[in-house]
Image (cartoon, rainbow, N blue to C red; front, top):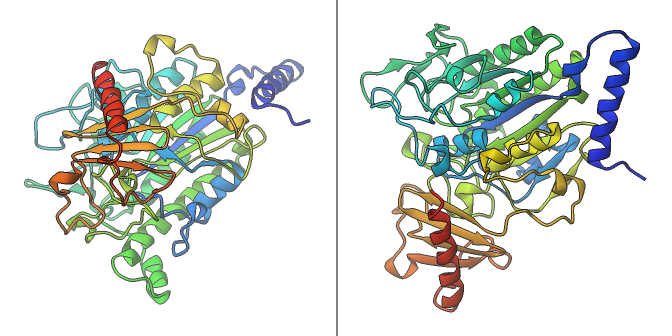
Length: 455
């Protein structure tokens, strides 16, 4: 009979404890697995081979899926960057994390995730981990709001929401600003590809950690615009007949995926694969903004994209891998969210986080048993005056925005300002059932009312 996940965790602990005694070496920290949390930027659920994409080359993301468990019904807590990433870091819904919308970048007044919020980095640092944030932050640029203020021993990357991958300048509105920092100090790597910089920084941090367990928040800016994939990948997709702008988007995804593979290779060559948990998700759906050439990414069968609370904006690819502890090559269909990573890690490490009043739930029960029910009975998304409420198969969108094709008007007509769907019957959210089901609409509105009373 196969050991349960919790039995395997006990076995791993006993093995290392015995090893530490017999070898006369202190391995106390090795009882704690290393953790790498990979978050991609604006990557649609239809943009990973393991999730059904047939026109995009992602062998290394697929490699994570093959060695672990993928979640087929995993949701971002928001359809834009900052609130989603704040939820990932804190296990709280965006409003309770203090980031209900995108954090403003330079030169606007400073906003960001309050430093008193407890992050994954805070939690793991207290357990003896070295912690690093590498890549995109977008949770506050002013003093007191940067990664080094949020539990990270080391930080490298850009503080704002977007940069050019070669000059590392933030281009949005003038004056344009160089945004590349290491531990709050501006650094210059002109002409060096940002995807290579973050890879090398991550590997360097791992090597410097020695015997101490590490947590790396590998927070990528790809495939967020500007689409700046390598020439070899652009040429590859064009030779395959992939149309514009998907050719540019795919090239950026594959350039990113290739470097994720190099990071996995680095773990393997150092004998760290089996002692490292890999978590992965996209922060929300793909972009159909003008700066993204009006598209390029894919939500597969789902309606909507970034900014939208239709499925294409919030249902994202997500996976977890820990060889010899978690199942390999399996899938789970239970509802889960970006709120769940912090409580899952706390559960693995037996850390009491009850005082934090988290909104997420540990995923260990569903990892252990594919038939286990989701811990969620309902979930509410609130974003810029628009809402979505999910309970079982039912989902109600209030003032929905359809960004499937952003260059077309996204506002729905007045009759669809309350848009009810049954996702089991209509996963593409085509037919509004609100008029036929007023009692379900009112029940979901009441769930939203109770939800809002919590913040």
